[in-house]
Amino acid sequence: MKLKEVKFIMEKRILGKTDFQVSVVGFGGIPAQRLNEEQVLELLTEAYDQGMNFIDTARGYMASEELIGYALEKLGRDKFYLATKSMDKTYKGIIEEFNQSLSFLGTSYIDLYQFHNIKTFKEYDQIMSDYGAYKAVKELKEQGKIKEIGITSHSKEVLDMAIDTGLFNTIQYPYNAVETQGEELFKKAKANNIGVIVMKPLAGGAIGKGEIAIRYILDNPNVSVVIPGMDSISQVLQNARAGIDRRAMTEVEKERLAKEASTLGAEFCRRCGYCLPCPQEIDIPSNFLMEGYYTRYNLQDWAKERYGAMSPKASDCIECGICETKCPYDLPIRKMLKDVVEVFN
Ligand code: SF4
Ligand code: SF4
Image (spheres, rainbow, N blue to C red):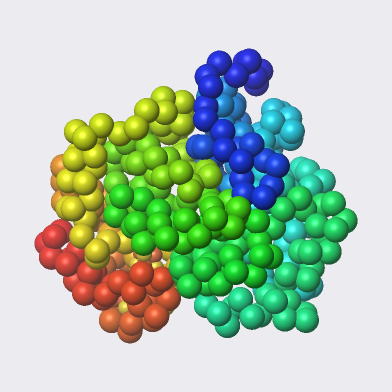
């Protein structure tokens, strides 16, 4: 696939203390796992043409690294800043994970290597211990295989402390019109010259107004880059437009977004998947997603059919509660699944 000259001017911001001039909209790599090599190549080609130069993926995103690696081989590794991450917390384990990432991505270096989803202070202590993952990552940085080190979490407290240590050049945290709890954290990161990468810009698919939702995030000057997941050309174009057409949101747009956010309330699933696996093998986030399509997007017939085809589903929940101990948003999953059953009954 041939790259065109970059036609559009997307806003760029410096990523914290790094010298990376990143496009404000980057390519979130989670949905790539649903696609094949040629489809990912097509998406990344368009993303580049639209001015995106930042890719975020992870060892944990199934085939995502491999598929992105295929595309980078065709497009040229140097076209993008490449960020990946691992949840391994041990010295030995993270080196293995890192080498796998290099091999899958077909590269000799990673621009930004992140500790993925550090949930608690206990987990943080694990990575910082004598046999922990940080030591290994620091050594890889000294060898030039990693350019910068970052950390991702759903815990504000963990990231707040991580900023204080001065050991990380970026943080990654959710932010969108319904999850604004990170704003003070972002302010502190900016004051310390630490890059802010925003995940979950559409609240895990709960917010439908993609372009406006991303513009809302980019209006926050403390944000460096937002990484929406995308699995179609139309999504690439829509997301890119938010970074190219950089005008502040109008009052009407703000109202439209606020109205949509208000319909979600606090009890909604961000589809992070941390509650899985369920011993009953229920795909918990997909059940909530179908309910959302049914109740919020006027797709009743389609949602009902999809829900009907799911097996097992919400009605198979035995209320063991294991999922609730793993949900970073403390959602009352058992109660919410009962609501799903009611909606589809
Ligand atoms: S409470 Fe229900 S959904 Fe949650 S883990 Fe147990 S069986 Fe699965
Ligand atoms: S229920 Fe909680 S843990 Fe599970 S996907 Fe939704 S937000 Fe994530």
